[in-house]
Length: 590
Image 1 (spheres, rainbow, N blue to C red):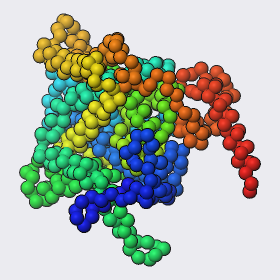
Image 2: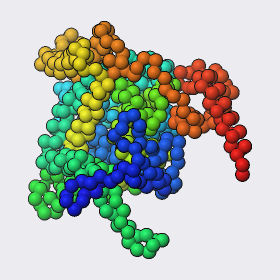
Image 3: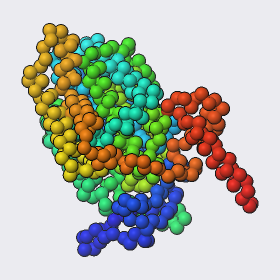
Image 4: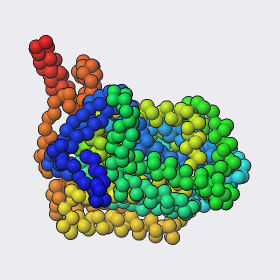
């Protein structure tokens, strides 16, 4: 639905009965209220729909552009923790390139073999608290500045420690999905577990946010420009001129570009501001907002045009016990976060509740994607990006093909190292602003998980309050009074585990929500007991595999015993529907 600014300066809403939208060659008219919860507006493109080439490229590019800012944050943080001295920018280029490739591959695997809904993967912010605690340990302080020449073995050992620790924690995520335990865990994890964990995740990231945003005032400019574009100007449609070949004249179309590309537009605008500050010398030499730092220019000029990131590019993985424990907690947080995201994308895509086999496959593929990210040395696992699900809700385009195109575009960007080098030259302060607005959006989504919980019950209020308070108080206490067991390794592990707020609060919320009696599952935010999801036609089922894959599964019945593959009953039902659909197609008059 488009909103235009009338002559009076007020926002005028067109008549819903005559509202039309044009996307990717598919035009549909909608007269349904978009805010209605009982009747969702029809999708322009459903999960199994494939738009024309132009629409597929445009929608895929839009989804890819939306996630660029999120993919920049982790490489910047990891390169700082590595403490590579004058090699920091060069390392950052390599990490950005690897991040785009790993995210693109994970997206393709998830949309093709995993959940099979439109999901885009990127590095997870859930790993930031563990990385922050690892960085804050006395033995991990950085003794080198950006101009110092740090020994390669020094910073490479840190990258390898992140690499090996992430490989082990991601393997646990893969095994949880492959064994089917995720399906059992999901029946015990409700909004009262997810909400405090995600809120505490954001609170635990605040020190990193303050560190980045305090570098320069342009971080505040970036923060408020995103708010201006994504919140205030989002409903306004902007006239865009184009030349019509058929009519041979310039015409105008209206699009809500502020709501479609707020992160990218704000990044370019503030980056341009930094360039102006640089050429006018308003920013002092070596200032945090300058775009002509010698290291940055040298890295861009020396970076190869094409490079293929590969697993093991930083050498043999190492292991750090404290970081491993922190990453295990982060992987658990990712698991809970993804369960909520799967529900969200199913609703936006107008699909039934995700079946157990699809959820197990989804988590298994997320584990594989995180293993790939770890092997490439990225320093953080991958997760589902909720921002892309929100964009699907706005555009009402849930096509799997468009997200697969987005994954391919991510891989292409990662292979062209010059592009990664240019992205690595973004001032750190701008990344701080992007991190701030990203945290704010995730915080809002986290709190919105409680909308299905009956918060008038004192039991639910107590569970929420106790978990949040414990997640805030216990880490602060042990930060001032660290445990002393006499063993340095054990002390590091305990300090790391007891300093991660989301682990403490999430674990307490999980225990209390599943042990304190007095409420029904519905009052805890779960769907009504015995609720059945209506079966959908095969051509509309986003979780179903292609017919030839189903026939392979049916030919080898033992495959159905794997918890991440369809059961024999589901396969027989699916194949029967395929036969009926094929016969009805053959009987249609020519």
